[in-house]
Length: 339
Ligand code: ATP
Image 1 (cartoon, rainbow, N blue to C red):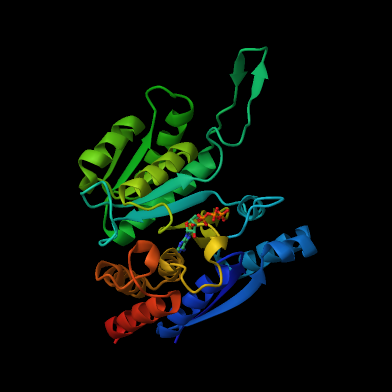
Image 2 (image 1 turned 120 degrees about the horizontal axis):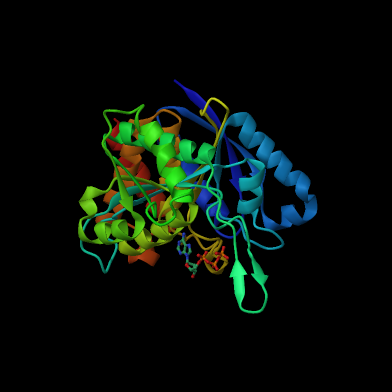
C-alpha cells in the first residue's frame, strides 16, 4: 500500500472541523495519508511570529504537498506570506456545476482555470503622476507563463480535454503577446491536445453561451482571478470550491503543491458542527489526484456531489445534516464505490 506524508496547515474558525472531516475521509482511502500538522492559527502566529511561517514553508517544501485550511487575515495575510515564501507560480481553480445547488444559470460548467500566480497588474500598486493621473506597471514573464501552460496541458492530458489560452493579445500585444507565445511553444510539445486562443472578452461571453466548449483555460493572473469568481457565480457558489497553488523547479517539475478550500474561516459557526466541509473535501480530492490516485479522486468527487444532489448535505445548502453526519454519508458512499 502506498503511503504519503503531507503537511497540514491548520488555521482559524472552522479549520479544526474541516480537518476532522478530511481525516475521516482519508481513513476510507485505500492508501496511507499521514498528515504532519503546523498550527497557523491567529494565536500561534501572534506567539511565534515569522519563525512559524518558515517552519510551515520548510515542511511544505520538504514533503512537497500541503493541505491548508482557512486562516484569518489579521496583521498579515497568511496566504500571501506562504505564496511568497513558497514561490507559487501557478494557481489552479476547478469550477464545476454541483447538482442540487441553486443557480441563476441553467447550463453545466466543468472548467479548470489555470492562472499565473504572479504579475499581471497585481504586483505593482502603481503611483499617482500629478493630481489626476495614475499609472501601474503590468508584468508578464516567460517562466511563469510556460509553467502555467505546461500545467494546463498536463491537466488536459489527464482529463482528456482541450486547452484554451485567453488574454487580450490583440490589444496588449507586448505583454499578452509574450504570454500567448509562451503557451504556443508549450502546445507544440502536446500535439494531441487541442488548443485554441480566445480573446478574454469573447471567452466570457462564450462560457455563458456555450460552456461545453471550455475545459482547461490558461491565462495571466488578473484574468484568471476575474474568471474564477465569475465562473463560481455561474455555479451558484464562491465558497464550495477549492484551489491549488504550485511552485516549480528549474526542470519545470512541481516542487511544492498546496491545496485549500476557497471559503473563509466562518467564525460565526465555528465549533457548532454545522460547517460544510465540501470545499475542504474537494481540495483533498484534488490533492490525491496530484499524489497519483486519479480514480480515488474521481470516486471522492462523485461521492460528494452525489450526496449533495440527493439532498444529503449541510444546512447552508438546504440540507439537514451536521458536519460529522455529512462526512459519514460521503465516507460510506466512497467506501462502497471503492469496494
Ligand atoms: P473570513 O474573514 O475568514 O473570510 P468571514 O466569516 O468574513 O470569514 P466567510 O468565512 O466566507 O467570511 O463566511 C461568510 C458566511 O458564510 C458566514 O455566515 C459563514 O458562516 C458562512 N460560511 C462560510 N463557510 C462556510 C462553510 N464551510 N459552511 C457553512 N457556512 C459557511
